[in-house]
Length: 128
Image 1 (cartoon, rainbow, N blue to C red):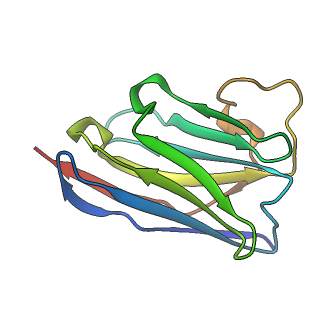
Image 2 (tube, helix red, strand yellow):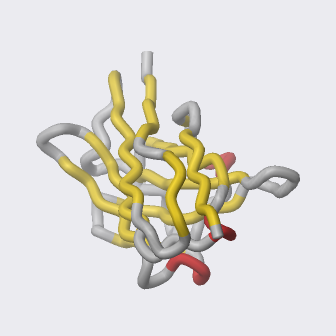
């Protein structure tokens, strides 16, 4: 039984930083595909970052490029999303997602339907 557990959310001021972590049981992140999505109140879920670990391909949505970094800790089987220079528009519930990969021919943000496993979400609130 696969379970993903996202953590690290919180309340920060504009310009602050947070590090989200996704831990897995029953699933190994190495050589598989991982992503972070977010959903703000009243808005649709949107992809934030995607990491195909088998070929080290990383994708970031334009609004977070240069501010967010996705990474994997193989030894601890965790995935992190380092978020710097946070803005109020980054406020959302953040979800980690994973699938046995690589997803074929994906060189952009995959649709969420392609991921089999999802964490429960962690709230990020950025105050202005």
